[in-house]
Length: 516
Image (cartoon, one colour):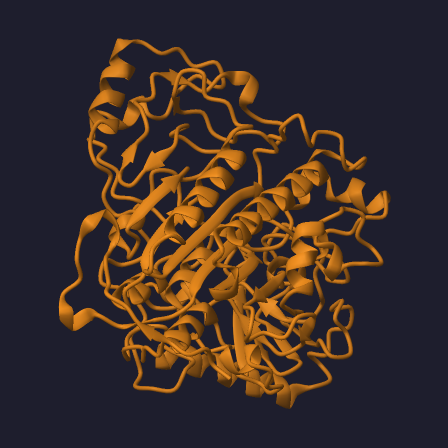
């Protein structure tokens, strides 16, 4: 049974009042916690036999809600998965056919594209984004300033007054195209914690003007990846705790008002920089990545504690998930030798079209609606967040929004049936994989990412119901299934959507080659 909705007056953040025509019934609060590079097997309740990292807070969330075992991100890497979650649309319908949004890249979400936040804002929600963005900005970088943002000498780059003058010109201006232009009232976070600029951004401005290059000691070795402008004295360890503190403060403050809120909290961890605070360093007994997973779990606990303390837990839907699988370069091979398998029973890691790249933890707690301790084995996708939240608040989506989003509300309310028949995920290098039921077709050889291994056949067909580890390629044995899935992929591309409704255009021609 859906919770009863009550009518409230709508007041947006920053004091703006919604027109009377936009007043809507209030729904539950929504908190989405989005881990970064957390593997399917890094969460203890997903990997009890081959997982060695304690994650008590995430496990407790699962015990209080529903744990999905066949949930997927849109990609094996970061930016594309974030796009799909926020828009309800597969990322490969955009210009991002492979890889991620590059350094100083332009916005991936089009200005007129409805996001989850924009939809909820139309329904009277206060919306906040705290954490990693990595979906591009319209950086105010002039042609004369750009050379000063990318040092020639690495990693010990010299800074002179010409650098600082360029940085003052760039970082004293508003930065367009970010979260506050895509449906969020407020933003606080780091664009990409291992890339410049090394500072926090609040709303559309940097919190301070960078004046130094990042110290060389903070580059490499799974710390920061690229040299660039930084605030004086910037360090990496405080980033994650600061995001947790900001999120907790937002929750407690927002719960005092009658207005419902949506908090999107894409954490910077356990992605690199593996900058672990002293409290957690060495606690796992495995390696620094495992320590960082434990710290990440503690931040999740901090947020859940804030929800409980605010008195809003009974009217708050909490969703926890991850953008893709664990990165192999954080010492995954060494972890496996010690008995911890970050991908659990799955093949591959971050970046791959194999399951370890994009099958991710997905947990929903919603008191009074979701029965505690439930496990759902139905196929779901992070693109489904848009349609699910719209269904909860009773908002029909426009024809040109959420084209690949299916509502999970029937599953949350206890039904046991498929809400989507198909799903598509992609590797870092652009290799597409399509699901229908237990069958999965990868349109090429190998992982499409960083993991090694190729098959003699031109494509890969797996029956995940019998072979979750993707060990037996049935491409040659099931030609009819291959043909059906090939035609399915063609239709998903040509119609511009996978949900019912009129065909929609893709932003660009989709890079895909039929097997027939």
